[in-house]
Length: 342
Image 1: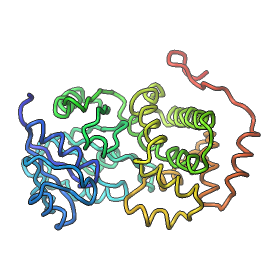
Image 2: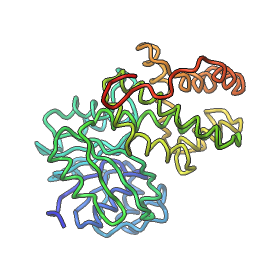
Image 3: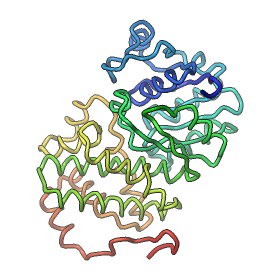
Image 4: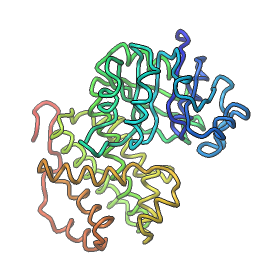
């Protein structure tokens, strides 16, 4: 086992709770920050977070607290697992409590609307001098909690941080791969949420397997094309953080964004769907941001445009699908690994 660490996890949702379980099972001291005093008390007394993962019995090494400074005190590794809309304010609140040179890892798959910034960019602005990384991949929290075999990607330009997080999280059911492309890994995690909504809609309409294959592969093409324009390494999208995460969120009803799409496909209005979900589905906000950025940069993203028209402009699904099928046929693969764009 690695040298024991004192780890803070900022955010007591599904993924933060699942991470806390892994880290504590690996013999490290874990403190989980969440806003709800009631849920913190439940974790400390009953070792459960029944609101998010009711079937998971947390290790006794997991402690919860609503006081952020207390959670961060003396911690050398910090995971940030809050919704994207809360990331900047929480980061500002963290600034005073972090010890210099801490390793801070973002797990949030979203984009800040003000200037199209990923969460690690927000953290870099609010927490200067800290060592930053990104954790992303096909990581459904309920399956992790059930100890289903899972893999993820830790991405940082700091090689020591990558190695430390790999050692911290690796166990019999959770494997951690490393990447030196944090921007690409993080961007992939944000973009795939859009296409999970599309896949959920398709499932509600009971479309055929050929169509599902078409949607997923064209989704990957759009993601890669957009990533290339943003300066990410498109080959990152061929790994766990790209195609791996895309597949699981486009195929599993455990995905919040998939569930949003499924209910939209059943004809429910967006406001009702989001209210019934009771949790953040990042893809709803990411859709608007990516569509706007794609128009600004001149990136062709017909699936993003079509979904935006359906959700926000009242377009009929049939008319959007018909237009997509009648469009000019672009190349299947739009970049090569060694030769740049095809």
